[in-house]
Length: 292
Picture 1 (cartoon, one colour):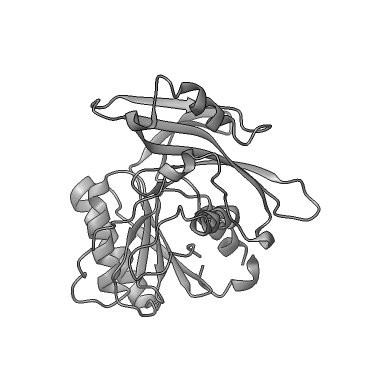
Picture 2 (cartoon, rainbow, N blue to C red):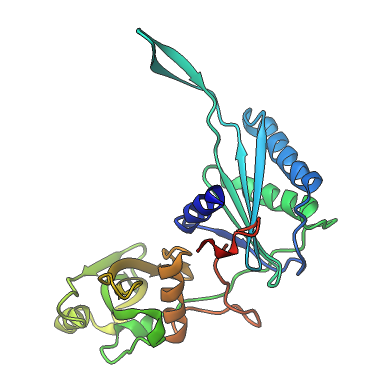
């Protein structure tokens, strides 16, 4: 139970998930044979392409409807000085690197987190589809045509909307990145302290209007701060995050991040894919549902 809880906590802190939708809506295969086939495929791929991962193990967990697969391929050997009794000598280590798959069978969506060469994304998705979803062929990946509505955030009368039960107490814009129209790669970043004045960024825009009219730029990134109360007995937490054109968001998929994503959606900022529900957060298997 403790191992599952720590894995889930770690996954909640990860950013930059790579998403793949349009997959068959089905439960993942978590039997030992299927999981071993996935780990072997990952090891073979990295052995052939990068000369590492002689060994690989995969742990699978479930929480609610979502399945987590933590893969730990063997990384390159490392030599580091260590004390062995009274002698200092080089000791060889074989640490793992990490790959995380999160499968939502109700939505047919696969989230993938890894660091390093992005060329591994496609093959890893194929391995998961073949061995865990039992797909003969990985379906085509439709383009994500969602776009954030950032322009509305420049208006002083814009109102953020959130559920009272979410614990969100305050949201304010504290940074804008403006891309100048007709000027290739020329950008201007405005940043303010919005702790005591929720409209400080709008006041600054008004001051700049004589030299920087609205027609001279479009907004490509917005920084925000939010105060969120997660416990009745604890003070509210201050969270800083940013959203960028066309559809990039730095929020994590933890408890606070999900509440703030719901706030962006309710405010008309967070985009939805056509005819597809907004993605929920990745979660864990081995029936540790009651851990969090």
